[in-house]
Amino acid sequence: MIIETDRLELVPLQPHQLKLWVEDLPGLEKDLNCSYQAEPMEGLFLEIVKGQLAITENNPNNYLWHSFWFLIRKNDRTVVGSADFKSTPNTRQEVEIGYGLGKTFEHHGYMTEAVQAMCKWALQQENVSHIIAETDTDSFASQRILKRCGFIEKTRGETIWWQL
Image 1: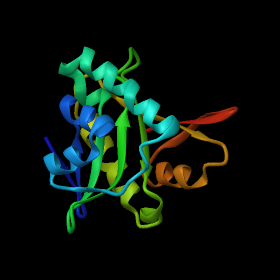
Image 2 (image 1 turned 90 degrees about the vertical axis):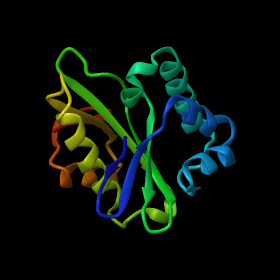
Image 3 (image 1 turned 135 degrees about the vertical axis):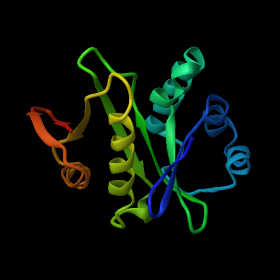
């Protein structure tokens, strides 16, 4: 399954591809015929991906809700970023979205394009009526993306929670 936008293909990593991302990036690039130029696979980000891999391996039927989706630029097959839904829809029919770009791809509208497409897809799925997101209070770029995608601020504390 692939979601297409004007400039991007949003490709959800299947469980074996998520494992390749963690263990064999060149193997994943070959598998997807792409060049990975997004966030470095290190530190906290690598730990988050490993956690999603463990969940996906235990629940492969719901991998679309636990895996990461690559944002692949169509014109040159470059992975500019990734996004994910952090779990299956909760009892309030909400799914949380997260996302990140490689530094060189910021301020080109890629993430707004991707978040809009992923939210549209998610809202067409059974048991989803809202998309939620959390930002740091000083993460202004991420907040602008959410606002452009129609999210509204729901609560503000140490972080800000948004809802579409």
